[in-house]
Length: 174
Ligand SMILES: [Zn+2]
Image 1 (cartoon, rainbow, N blue to C red):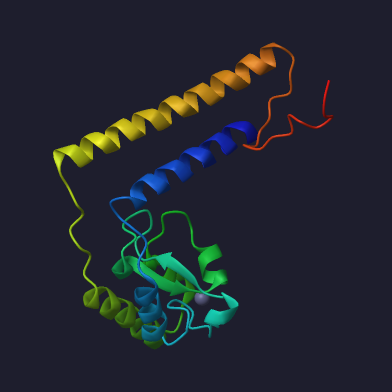
Image 2 (cartoon, rainbow, N blue to C red):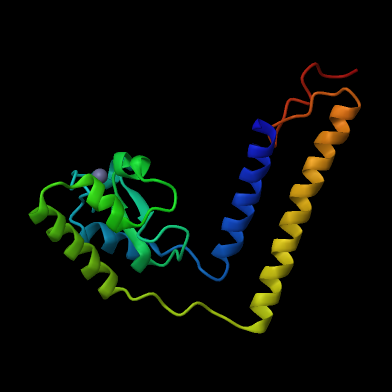
């Protein structure tokens, strides 16, 4: 199980990297504006955050979607961790904030942020689609090759490494 997990991690990194080409990370100024807009507080629970201590996370409003600043929220580590995979901000807010007045106030604030920064249209063209499809095929190929390599190593009685750096060189020269 561990081995396929680490292979998946590498593939996830590759996909993130790929998405970053047409959908880059926001600029420093945009993140500074995010902190200012949310008054250095977690958008969900309202916890005060210190930017200098790197306490805040630039989470996604709609996870797995766009990286643009309009889809980012200032979150504390606790809210960031307790968020379920693929959970939308509204659901997280509902789970986290019982007080209806606070819930409404925070939801309105997040909506105001999204309204202020509408998501730009993603760059689309047949060329972009074809490049992304090629890269996706390469990632699948890479993942399959990793699995085959592990299977081949196991077949020869070697302990296959489960991490990209591995421990192949332990023991030095032989
Ligand atoms: Zn929080």
